[in-house]
Length: 238
Image 1 (cartoon, rainbow, N blue to C red):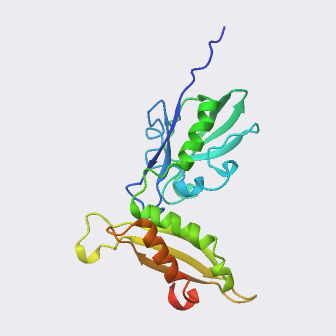
Image 2: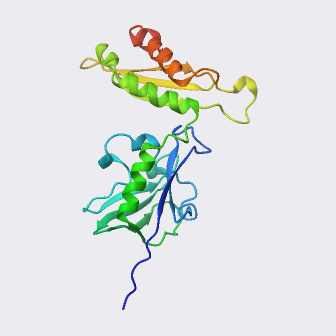
Image 3: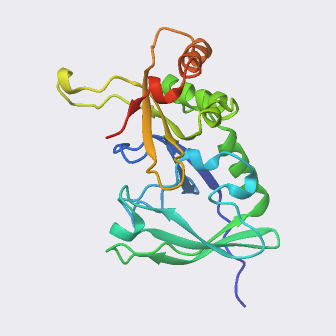
């Protein structure tokens, strides 16, 4: 007689990657029974970043439904097509959530064992992680709140532009002072061209101060962006 499967506990941990240039937001890394079981089989892989955990629950990277679905668990800082990624099939069976049918498309051949979670604990942990901002540094909070403000403003649409992203900009460690990038927030958008025209891309590189309240800085930076036609005040990409 086959024994009952071991029920594991999922913990989702926000972590700012050492190499954050590809995506400056924190990854939301899954731990199984407190252990990073993915590190051994895909050491270069990063879990999907917290920017993918915004919005409705059905859009979260690890949401599980009755229909099995193959999802990326970790991927490299380049692309999955370049250096490979770690995939699993996620499905719900009654009061259990199952991760199995692992696939490692990187050079490594090791795979985790199948994992079984209690569905209630699993769903609660996804909801907790999606709402968790305790890991944020001030630059992360400013970027997140500024994105909310700009997304709901309708300002870019007024100028036939599309807001494509707001992200924190971190200081590069271990660089000479003259090469260090100031900490701040980057607001990126593109001008939607008329038919036959090429799209143009722009960036606001905004500074964030350590000695001013976050909410005050968000209001100040939003006022800078919303003061004029963004195509005139932002830096165009070459």
